Image 1: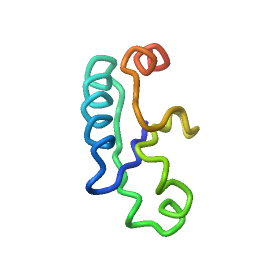
Image 2: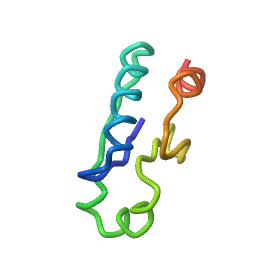
Image 3: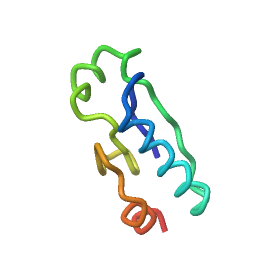
Image 4: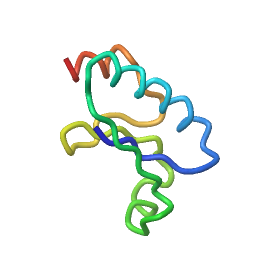
Length: 74
């Protein structure tokens, strides 16, 4: 799973907590990526972070629901 974030984003901070907790519960691996280090990611996702990718596909954005995420990972 990949979590796209950017500095100073309070929704990203909230999502990070949810995603880390769900990953710990399900044994899923998490990679967080700051979009500001990549011009293409910044162009495509600057207004949509946080974005969660599951199996390479954009799955959810902004406010991440722990129960929904857990159900897709189990």
